[in-house]
Image (tube, rainbow, N blue to C red):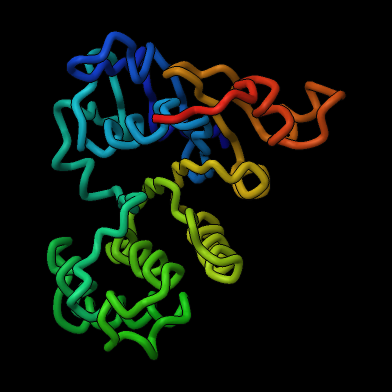
Length: 251
């Protein structure tokens, strides 16, 4: 069967008010169903801006986005029913327990009763947090908060999952658990769009990647193919530094 295009981005641009330079500059991307697509780049490259536009949280300056054959600017309500979003920030109430947070989020998705209870238990168990369900979020470690943050974005079993730096600043054990769970979701049919600055992680996790710099796509393809195209480099990090340079990016 031919591969199905799930997301099409055409000439997408975004210039923030007061800025002389665009955050995104006419990018074009085609994301296939059931793939893990990585958006990589240094600080200020446009990764989070892209995710925010695709989720309907931010209006583009120009360009067109189609998700599951629906135009984003005309069908946001329908599109939001099939997407999940895990932001870089911890989007949880610190004084509520994990269970209370997830009950609230689940109800926002229209889940209720036994269906919601079973789904919360299933996700907490899979990510090793069921025994901590009654603990307040403010008492959780960073890795535990990241795992709850992930659960909040997947309770409704989204067809498409947007992840903005889902493993930033956490321990190796939590990162391993999160990535393994995401791989399992992908194997079950969830399409994942993911941003990260962990190049080794992205090399092993993503089926395809785009490297952004200054709002433009400067490379795209399968990680192994990109590495093979430059025999003098042996990994994605080397390719990344070759393309984006080694100077610091402070924003």
